[in-house]
Length: 93
Image 1 (spheres, one colour):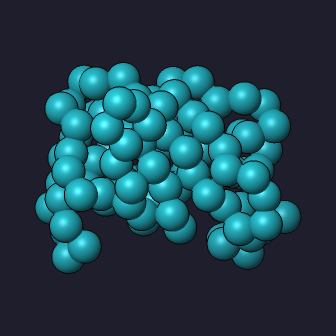
Image 2 (spheres, one colour):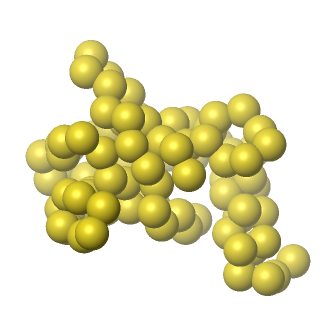
């Protein structure tokens, strides 16, 4: 799903993995490990959600260099959307 790291120089990319606690994001470049970021995640059928997070690691994969992001602040309503999205993908309720 499309995503974006906000800031003075936005990084557009793709969220390859999404969970209640974080995500894996692949974009045109990486942000240093330990950096605090604001991230926009575009889930299907709803307005983009905003989360605050910290870059925990970098990993290269077939899609390019990516970043593991641990969420540090998510609104209750956005967390509900994330949970519904993840549960639907896992076949849960």
